[in-house]
Image 1 (cartoon, rainbow, N blue to C red):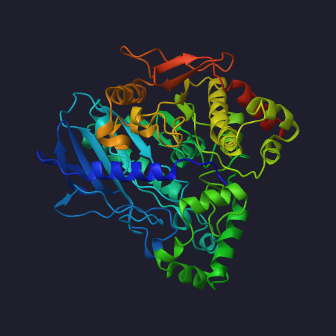
Image 2: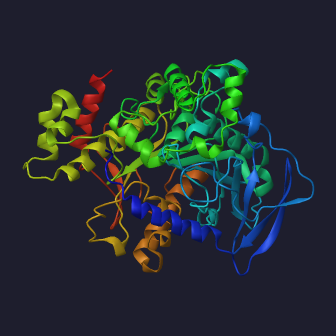
Image 3: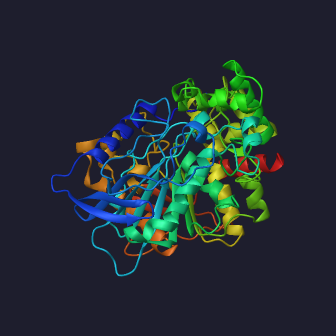
Length: 524
């Protein structure tokens, strides 16, 4: 089973951020912007104006289910853009709909004489769940950038490769519909962001977990070229930079998975009637048994949820694994920030210590000496360390290695900060998966509410300032912040966001990550 990532705490975080995002402002006033599909009216609060629930593509329903997203229809008059649109279909209990392809924009109320850099956020969730209200962009935007977030299809509605779809539209990309939604949103930004004060030539894409994996996918996709100039990958997973750690799905395998799922519902064949029957299924049916927990468990035990393919090497959007593209230098050559948390998510399973260290094959004895030198560490703690290193921590360093070797400006980090109110809780020995986000978005109160401290706020200001400066200039350094050295694979240095601030030094995990690197290199 995958390592404990503090799910209850994560759900609390998601709910709290959602509440913050939808809370009305007592001093709100409206603003109107004209885009290529009509006028939208947003809401001003303080120094930021937000526009929510803007359609960036046609509703993917009926005959457009499992199709490359189509242009959004025009509307007459002024469209209300003061509320988030419904999230895409998932098992989570929240406002959702199959008609979900909307995005949100936050921008400073005071327009700059020159267009501002743009930060486009892609949420994570194992490509099975996620939503945009969870990530309000006002605190980032107030620092002089335009922030965009989008919904995209997930699960069986977003990543599904039934062969009947190929017969219907042989020339279209198929299978990775969620990625194609993200691509459509990035193209929307190119067409419309100037209306919100943004510069389409200065776009940063950033995301966490499957969102970071999505950023990686766009870095290597031939279809995403020219749509962004910098990239931030926070604990990138699904995919990672090590294809064997969280494997992608070959097209033929994805087709088989879709055929098997359809057959489980009594739908067989690969002709137009088959496709019509699949499209007639209620969206609620298509999300059954496909929660993020189910998907992660399936990834851990090697038994994927039926009909769930995740990232597909479809031959058009993704022609190869990211690590194959990186090794050959076929990625887009942009500046990169990448890193992971010190208590990050691990995917895999082990019933005993022997099983766990056996994951490193012939290096099991070395692994035991590094992770459990006294032989007295608890199995659950070892699983957290070993599986996180395997799944996200070492792959993040590997991605930094590949970018640096290619000559791309690269900054590698680790996040270890824990809110002061949570220190001492055995569940919070470090930063759990996804819990750097309250700081990189500068919303630390989202995690601990009224228990937020000046130190928590200082970390939010510090981390978000690095992120925003990178979006502005392609380098996170500036101001009075501690210098973040550019990553060099030959130098043992990592910047760690800790209770003492951003501290640069030797990586205490280096021997463990080096061992994983040796193991992965032998698997080629």
